[in-house]
Length: 239
Image 1 (cartoon, rainbow, N blue to C red):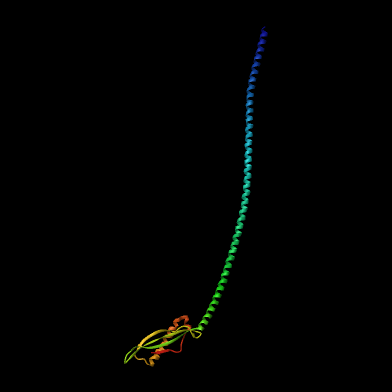
Image 2: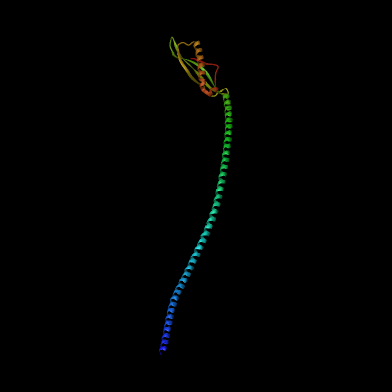
């Protein structure tokens, strides 16, 4: 009986030990299973996060691609604008050169026209002056002013035994056209005096004085002096 009891005890010990071991292993397996589930959940979460990161990366790549395309389009437009700008600058430069050439040509044409007009004006002026001189010469030949020196002697104070006379020395002028009188004559006195006695010698002196005075006055006519002609005779009146 003791051997059986011992055997039973041993069996029970072994059984208890086995059961304890099984329970420990089960507990350990449960813990490991829970850890595995947690790791699987973490892996699942990591895969989800990875997918999200991949989506964000794809979106970023698409955005970068769009920006790259936009940058390329901007560079192309910039190059096109640069080409257009260079074309405009070349066109403007060509227009400036053309304007400068046209301006110089117009200035040269204007100068030539002014020189031509100046030459024509000078020629016309010279011709008109020549015609005027010729016309003046013809008019001068047709028009003359004849100047007659005169000596007028008039009684101013007559008494019984003596008589005073006023002696007036001057000239008479009259306009003639083709040797025909045009206007009434006009007397211009130059000197006057009163004399008690007046003989032929004094009359001759007065006559010479009249001629001298007329020759002194006529040069004052200036350019018109060629129209004047002094008569050969002196008008002498004794009243």
